[in-house]
Amino acid sequence: MANFQRIKGFADLFSPESDVFSFLENTARNVFSRYGYEELRTPLLEHTEIFTRGIGTETDIVQKEMYTFEDKGGRMLTMRPEATAGVMRAYIESSRYAKESVSKFFTYGPMFRYERPQKGRMRQFHQLNCECLGASEPLADAEVILMLMRFLNEAGLKNLVLEVNSLGCRQCRPLYKEKLHEFLLGLDTDQLCEDCRRRMETNPLRVLDCKVPGCKALIDKAPQILEHNCPECKAHFGIVRDILDAAGLPYVLNPRLVRGLDYYNRTTFEVVSTSIGSQGSVAGGGRYDGLIADLGGPDTPGIGFACGMERLAMILADSGAWQLPESVDFFLAVLDEQALQKGMLLAQHLREAGRRGEVSFAVRSLKSQMRQASKAGAAKCLLLGGNEMAMGVVTVKDMETGEQQTAPMNAILDFV
Image (spheres, helix red, strand yellow):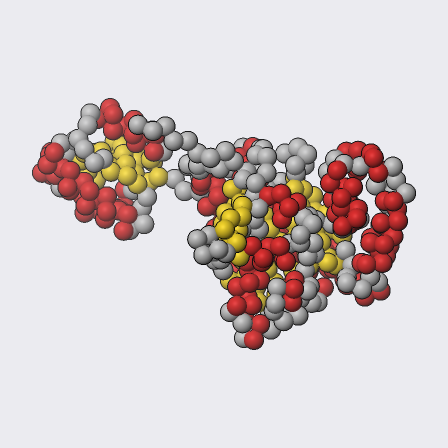
């Protein structure tokens, strides 16, 4: 028999790991719907140009990390490395902009990037995304940030720091990029990493995003983008901060926060965990006015964020606070052959009434079935054999106390 193994950087998620993901998805659906967001599911495969035009050719994602291939029709396709560009494509293709002034979408699912696998960061990873399209007002920025933090709070995540910044707009940011480029030219560029030496010529703003300690130290005195925001951008960001302050939401102003994608402008934000080490970012996003127009749609403003579900799940698991959201109500142990079919139908009756449980498919020793009931975490073990069937009862054993009692078969719901 061939010994097939999973591909490096890809994971199999069994329970309870998969249960954490389901919990996060359900919590997100509950919270996001309260803010008027509807679920959108987009394909895993898109035309490569959607990402090269949307994300930016100078990003690490496009240059190093995309899973791209030519299909049998000669088309260049890419497994989605992030969700926003695909959502924009769906928004444009469906002409949602002609049907409503503001569209709000959330989506979740697997993304793919070829990078070195590490804790909380795999080649197939999962994201929760939200996109608010059509609203240019700073109140939309504030609502998106408040919604993100509400989701993280209701998911039970602790030790999180919200960082915010403003990247300016297409009018004021080019002037800042010139100032930053002048500053970088004055450095000893031999001390910069290879990526930063390339970025300082192609997109100097990306140098601020470098995580290499030596580069971070060299650019510590670089001009700050907030100081070069135009009056309109300053006013926009000021209102965002005023609302966060009034809502009592703490945050840190981080003038070095630029995010890793070229399409961001004005408000940008990131949520960092203080409990999982240097790779602590668990969520982030920002405004991307102009992205829809760059992808061939109308000039529509937008803002959104993404959450890395692997890291959220890791924080929940490490906190010790995570428990399965539901217990198993029963395990039905079958004591002899004549009770097999009746046991299956009785279990079906309980499930149709909303109870959660399992039933034995074969007659095995009582000890073996009790072990299975214990492993399943069942609150009650139901024992059904010929004697019980003759009397029209079920023996009910409390798995915590060990106490047993008989219950009428037609009233078993009252005992489970």
